[in-house]
Image (cartoon, rainbow, N blue to C red; front, side, top):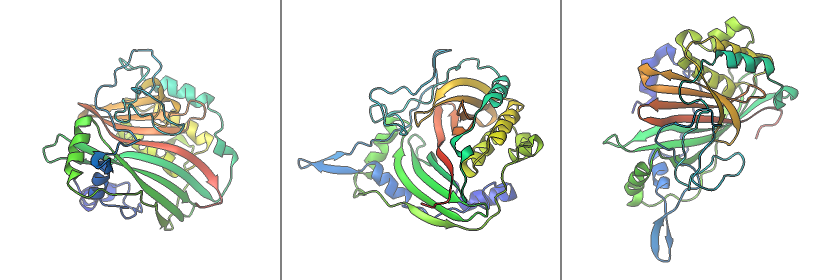
Length: 334
């Protein structure tokens, strides 16, 4: 794995996060792995504690063409706002309404831009931009033989003013696995070590001053901001960054959709359900050169970005997944 400093050195000035503030890790990667295999004593015997969160499923994204897409659990349901667990172990990847031969996304994105309505925050005011996000698969760890993977997960809440100041509160979530074999492997690895107990308190760090310019609704400026000259893959990442950093007004949300409509390569996937159980509409871009797919899920009423997923194409595995659970204006921090 590349370390952060090595990665930044290689990217140099092209690193989009070179000025970002990164807080210290809440716990070590080894401790997280230990938690993945945490055990408890029941009737004098040690057994693995089941996690109530998901593991990520390997497999294909195949669904019947025209079927309304949804998460496919093997039983049970989750509370609103929580991902849907499949028997507490396996989550089927987000299914697409149009899986085979999806149409070009441009016409649908333009139609969506024309009909979106106000979001709740369009009627709010406040000093701070508030964002609540969850990320799975950042970072990923792979065993020495390259066969077994564990994806770390985190939850973040950010309150940030226009001058960059504010607070960031982050918590580590339970690790996730792409398949049962990986889960078993990492639990065996941690079985010989004392299990971590308890849930760590969120790590809160103050944010230093920095200029945050509100995103423009001018198409030429948006195209530059979203780096569309580098293609749909780069644009997908920049859209995710934009919505995770700013409270994007309605006019700009519509402009974003129209800009994406003109970027070659996006395909329309129709109705989907994201990992927080919310209904949305999705577009994807297949980056064959890097064997990866980018997925963006938008709210069909407001045009807000709900989620951004990055998958490897062969085999299909979820590399990272981000959900934006809440966005708001507020005068209060915490």
